[in-house]
Amino acid sequence: MDKNITHFEYSVAATQGENRISQIITPEVSVTLECATPPEFPNGIAGVWSPETYFLAAIAGCFVNTYQVLADKFGFKPAGFGCEASGKVAFVDGKYGFTEITITPKITLESAEQEATAVKVAEKAHKYCLISNSVKCPVLMAEKMVFQVLETA
Image (cartoon, rainbow, N blue to C red; front, side, top):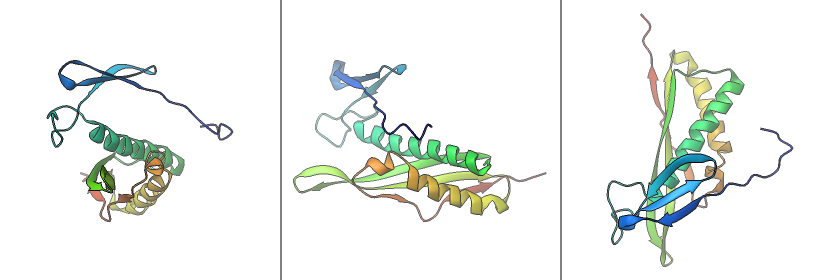
């Protein structure tokens, strides 16, 4: 990333489709996404991604991508890396909104000696994740990361 560039712009468009399922497109991607109100709300549809699940996916995906960039800078190569995101929604001041989001990094290591570096990279990824930094509710990192160490034969 060129640090001289101070801003970026992204765009998407959503249109209402059949059966209350909207179609989401962006000029940068050829795949159309489907989106519907979650089943917790009136006329919600189960089994279709909702704005709420896409919101959490954006946070988890950005965290994973940020982790990968920082791991490369550290010269650290985990055997595997992923992240789960969960969020709490509440009715506050007359409207619904996310009140807290928790991300749980899941890191597979070649050896237990890599754990300190894995934690350091995760903490930096949490600090620099663009999407998390753009959210008004707290985005917390779980106190317990999930590690798996590969057995060597």
